[in-house]
Image 1: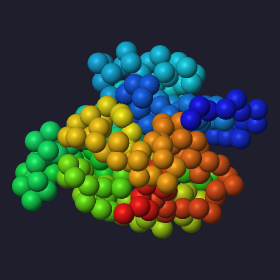
Image 2 (image 1 turned 90 degrees about the vertical axis):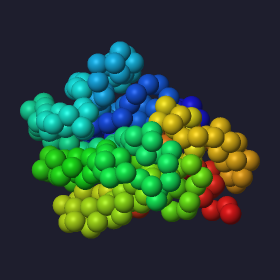
Image 3 (image 1 turned 90 degrees about the horizontal axis):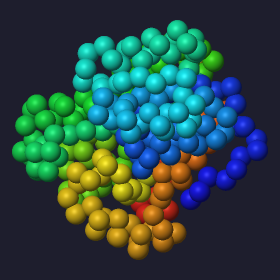
Length: 261
């Protein structure tokens, strides 16, 4: 999917943070591009100095007024980003959380054999960081807003080689529901977006991922793979005020693949 030229700036005036851009094939980049195309302001973070040189040109492309490092494993970095948002904008309308991580030995091993340190690191980055971002975003969403995170079908069904990440994504989807219930009275919606398989850097750590892509393309009702722009457009739609009464959902953007046995 190629984003069409948008004449109506449907998200003009909205200000948001997008976390998880690593390069131009990242899901988070598809989201940043969609929000920017619809007129929203976009703050962007990068993981570390090594990642900065790949992310900085993309941040410039979406005219990001805030561009900062954020590694949720480094004490204080996450809080510093939200402090900067408060100082620069004083408010926040949307947040896109598109990060996940598991140590290679934990990810590639059996769930039954997961070591405690690997399990905790997987949950910290892949689940708890979204909860923490929701906590920091809440006081900035003075007029309501929308929180988004990225999940995958392996949270609901056993997907070969997805392993411990399936456990983390199941916890993440549950967190979405509880956060939606807690934040709903303040007009804050919370969603998990579940794309079909995508050839991203994060997916490269999953063994036999090419076979999974082929299976998705052949079995999905639409007979095509999802793109980062498809995911971005769907996420941006849910950030619009027209979707203000939709919350707590896991939205599949996968060509219908999840409905096929």
